[in-house]
Image (cartoon, rainbow over the protein chains, first blue to last red):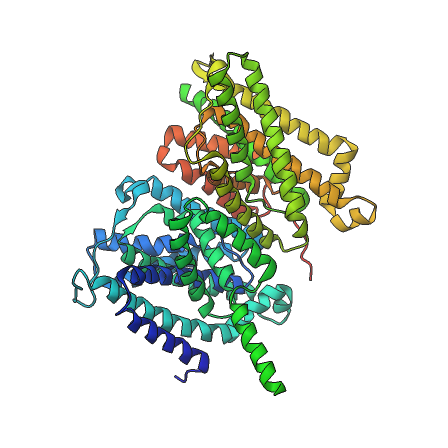
Length: 319
Length: 299
């Protein structure tokens, strides 16, 4: 497998980030782990945004991933990390394969509303399930890796390294997907679906595969979140959580696979300080930022970076 | 038999409340094609305004009770006018013509801002204004004790629904509005001041939202987060009926109200499930909603 420049750069950043975890304070490692878990969910949102679909219900798969991991640990006493994550992804993919049949018939606000409805159905069911702790949720058991159980101090750092590795590999895969014919088709569907149909392609099939894949990616984020936080609750499926993912997706933009990761980390850092300094203004900061991005930076923060690169090239060309 | 009556009465009360909450949302969507996520905040603002003012009035004075009801209406109207004008003139009018989905996200940003703005104005402690609710007493209906305030809510919601329908279908202004709903550009070409219609409709929708909040305030404890909770409910109602349709919203409210009441009485664990379940079911079978019209695809 030959890697192009972007992919090599992303893998390089991942290695640097993972090694910096050895010297970083524990709170920072935890914060970055959570941010990366969220960024995986946001990747799922961005995948659909590239196809022109805004989901206000990606929390559904985030929650499914988290609960599948939590419940497998709790009821089946599985503690192997890869197995747990696979169960999470498989459950989400299975559900998405069913819901996708319906969801792909809808566009625009109908898609947004229906995705919201499904995630709220899950929320409603979990809230009314005393066996799963109702609104409180329950704790997730400690994980092991192929029989190795990390010592109490090691677990966060080990999980940090694992999630970086997974995020990096996934970023490379998604980068390739974005440049594949299916990924290009998604953008074509966003631009003009009817023309795609006239070209003899089935938008529904493309959107279906995209929806199912996005669900799997988001569930992976949910699974990591459950393992990192050690706790899950129905709030994961609440629509405000899904709204947060949409926010991060717009913050980063959809033009590059690294954008959601960057945005999720920025989001987590700013949130930590904002809640500390101005506890009752966090949502207002979010709202104002969101409006500012829509008006001034419709392609997200990433357009600042890529815009600069392009300008630099233009200067070079002149010289 | 008693429980059937209970379901019907509870359902009717809940449905009328739902209709009040959803009416403003559907009016705004129908004319402006904005699915307004901030509608829940309008509801919350109305509730806060009413609860703080009415609570203050009853705690400090010995004035007559009916003044309290007037104050509820008054502050709902004032708050709705102020907030609606501020948002439409100050923000939304610069956003017209953008994608429908983008408008959802813009109003989502508005919701986030308003949620914290309310915390700044009213703090995070709950407000209570139970007096108007308690003062009306209870009556016995089909062997069940029902609060008169809830019955009044049914009446108010019927009046508002009928008035809206009458305004839209039987007045000149309503005709202009329907023209805008049908085709914005042609209406504009015929000399309709679409911008003014938009301002009017948005303020009307906002007032309907604050009114719903003000009328609900005496029955609940007004605390942060009430707006976020109801917005999804209102979506469900509006989506079921067909977005932008008054009759649709009424039918959607009735459907959701009765199903929820039935769930509460017979299978309480499905209470939340039922509401969104009905919404998903209707969307699956009739995506444009029960009263919505199908749009032709444009290339």
